[in-house]
Length: 599
Image (cartoon, rainbow, N blue to C red; front, side, top):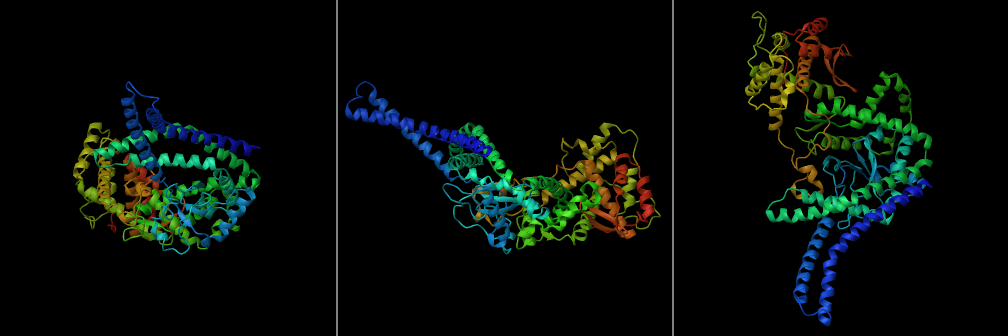
């Protein structure tokens, strides 16, 4: 009963959208109809004399203008390809078990099976209609700029034929963390949505709304020439008016479709769906932490982890080991994982990992000299060690630019080298109760020393003391200069392969989903001081770089993670008290006066 109610509500809203389309067409045809009546009346002698002749010509010209404008708007709407989500296409021969499971699920739900399956590097799943009235389906997997996936066996593109049902897009972390039964339970309400999608009224309403939305995007794009801007401005005004008129009905239609799909899926694996929803929440948490703590440092170093989805499993397994509340989740690992439904899960994971870097960081679409994959085994040496030494080198470059002296002890050996003592001495010796004007002047002096212009929004750099403020400002300026000098990624596949659907990707709007806001001055300074401490520990005390699945880069001392370093660095940065950090270094046998190796 609930299925019928939701479907009926969706159909009624779809009819409302189609009525708006019909009214727009009627408005466009109305002047032509009046002109026809006047012309016929004049030719038969019924409407003659007076000003009818002039009126007839005015209305005819107006009708022609309106018809031409309507035809132009219709052409723009028809030829504007709706945006397609970036995904990794999965051909049936590369995942026959997954396709079989989805088709069996569709049969149980008594709905059409999805036309194809694709993966998204995110914790979400949905149906996506990739047909277009004028062009049919978009170019093979409209977002195949992950060109590394093209050379991967089993990741073929979709055939050029209009599918009978939408494409099922599955979040790739679900495949690796969830078991087969859990994945089926999670996908049940999504697959059930193919039923309402097959209704002709709902499909027509969706095509109309998607066409308007795509036309608005086209008319909003920057154009050359005043004539083009004027014409597209008029088209944009009309399409926005129609889109605003449809917005409420379209939203209610989608709610009705979702309600009908959820109600239809109630009978499928109801008990298992409750457990599966818990795994959805865990996957969200593990994926977010893996991206922000583990993947992001690698992306910033020009490396992209090639097995992100496998890392989700490792991160959540580590969470279950640390958290007693998660103990029961580890027992699930003995069951068959959903990634076993793929013929080559490692290949698919690599393609999804590259797309994740493209989406969340804005990296290049394919590997290159400055954008190479890295395995989890090589992550500590190729990412963590390099990151720390790069940050330490940047810290000393800023100190040099600010004119900070090396060790104040003339008897110290290698006093001119990059030592941790130099950093601690600079941050420890500071005046008490500094004046705010002095802090602002320190920020400005630091920017001037680095050859940058001070930003009015950088007030967070002044951390309460002059030396910390100047050092943080210098780090911010140095990072900004490095980012500005970095080469922009080349367009995907060359300019000859561009199409309107790729505009968001290749016009400098990436990343589409940035992971973190810009780091504050305090965070930048703490990260760089921590990097210097880790370099000193590795070079003088035998420590090693490591990877913590939940916290990212970590320092290993005698094989154990040094978890007590962060608070001591913050004490030095925020208060200028170096005693806790010096005690920690003394306990581990670290020689802060010894120069460290930098990149």
